[in-house]
Length: 185
Ligand code: IMP
Ligand code: MG
Image (cartoon, rainbow, N blue to C red; front, top):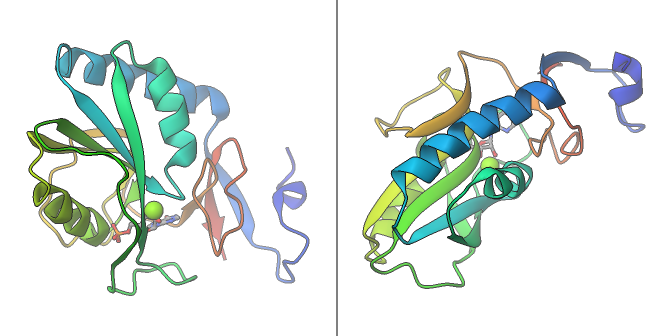
């Protein structure tokens, strides 16, 4: 796939997209994490909570690799504007639709960067009296990590850079790409 073809029509200055993970590599990583989660949560009541919009692609693949029954819900959080770094202000724009009291909760994120979003969400979920709250992210990015919050499951770890594709966006573009790319502006 040529770099040029992947850019959106509206881009004037063509950003460069450097391949990081292919469709096949993504599938392998998810299968590995799914085996671990299926083992860890056997005979438990697991609720997966996806963080919209970025996590929807990962979560839809993840549930189909799990071998245990799960419940599923989404929350939507606004934390980012349209740039590449967090604005620091976090708001819940879509709340849970199902009860999580007494259940094991696994937050499913597309990418964890500073950890602010995750810290805020796990603090909020804990007020709803779940049995446990843990975290699964497709990408664990260490560059700006501020919060000392454990990432329990990660498919891929990177030190830095802005990544797009497989649900991850830059100003709402690139979510549709089947692979993960490093966006060089
Ligand atoms: P945090 O609160 O700094 O951890 O930011 C987490 C959120 O920022 C993620 O759920 C993404 O929506 C967004 N984000 C952080 N880094 C990237 C990136 O490299 N590509 C796309 N979105 C990102
Ligand atoms: Mg997100």
